[in-house]
Length: 284
Image (cartoon, rainbow, N blue to C red; front, top):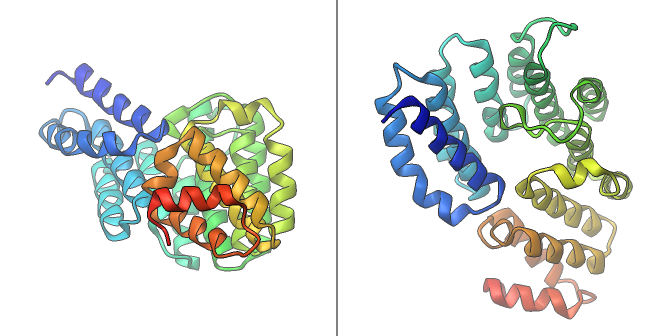
């Protein structure tokens, strides 16, 4: 297979992921991974990107061990290329457990891109910012709210230079993505009211509409968790149903999303609409 055709297949896999067509991507990936293996010496970037999208999908499907393996292979394929290493580290950050060491791995990958100066390309700024967001989410899972704020503020400064509506290195990084990171971090820290305030602000901006479907639907699941933290099952149900409308596979094929639906339906004040979705999902 020619490098151009292989690159097109990798791009198609990423687009399938970003449109949250997970069952279709499950069908595509075995053949794609086989093909990129054969092209490893000629096109290591294709190998990294194929394993990145594989890891991203496996995280969605709740297959943590396999996701770790895919992310690790992406890192190995990157060799000493600092940009490819940063790309692979983004997916690695999704599977690392919350720890100071995991946060350090993200920050080290960000710093390997070089100093933060005017010479950095939008792509490199996007990678650096995405790694800072990942580090912030790891810190949030560890309960370190001070570090979370510092890292997200630094990421916001980079995002302002990149702008919204871009997807450098499949990061969708920009001001809107950082604000979604703030929401996710607030949820991890148990601050549902603050998460909801930030959510209401970001969805009114143009940047929200430019984010990939997968990213928006995943965010709405985080917001449902925030509403549950504020004892508001009605609005939790509302955002879950909205996620189901824009990206059904995000709700129907993602175990974490199904768990949130199950939490909502157990609330005696949950609206009938969420019960119908739970029945469709086979959740009792």
